[in-house]
Image (cartoon, rainbow, N blue to C red; front, top):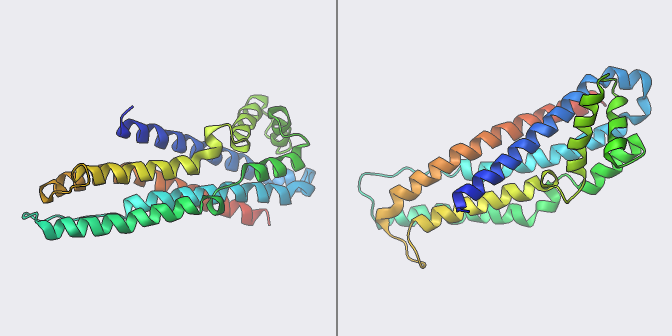
Length: 231
């Protein structure tokens, strides 16, 4: 698998995780009034569960921003000064990627906490138990309850890609930066004439990462609003 394909596959995985989290948030929001009337005792745990998802969305948006904020304008005359400038920018953004990787535990929604809060509500950290959680929202759709339960299950256990979406995002970020750096040359060498090619590749990646940055940012905003509504 090429680096580009690996990055695209990873970003697709993260994009699907974002969509799944959005669907869970939507279901919780729809069931707010029902919960307040029928199951007010679970409001706190629902808020805590949503907050774990918010952490992951925030981390994904941060990781995406490292790439999308890396902009480089090139002049008609690409000389050594531009190569140095490009490399300086690269070092700066690579250090941001390294920082995110070093602080993944602070940024991610923790599977164990997701399981803990979901189990506190539903009584069982299984797909069947999670289905019960969504029944408590008054959705009145066994099929939807099951689908949402399966999504929650994949977010609650480390064996699933969904649960590791932030790690995947940071890996994609570092792969993309490395690919851009390698475009400047090989075997540790960098050449001024390769700056336009590297800048073009950077712009191509930035477009893909920007889509996820916006999606994750919107998801985080929606989750924060839902948490506030749950008090």
